[in-house]
Length: 63
Image (tube, rainbow, N blue to C red; front, top):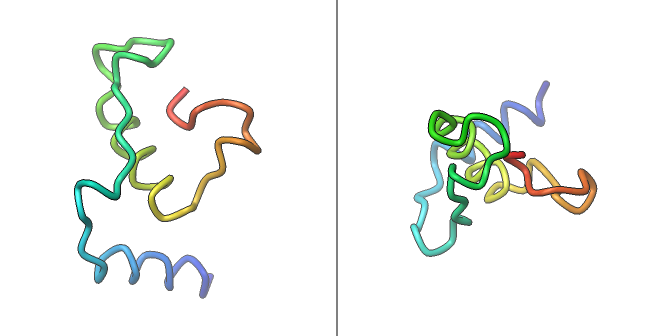
């Protein structure tokens, strides 16, 4: 619980540089690529804060 709170606080307090956040195109998603902007945006932010590991998942996060 404390880890989650710490991560949320870091997200809110850390200014994001556009150059540092990974870019994923929503059109690369396998399912409904024209309506997945929310999950693609979430994937970019979660990868930026190291909340996910695409190597462990075996695929790029949004897929």
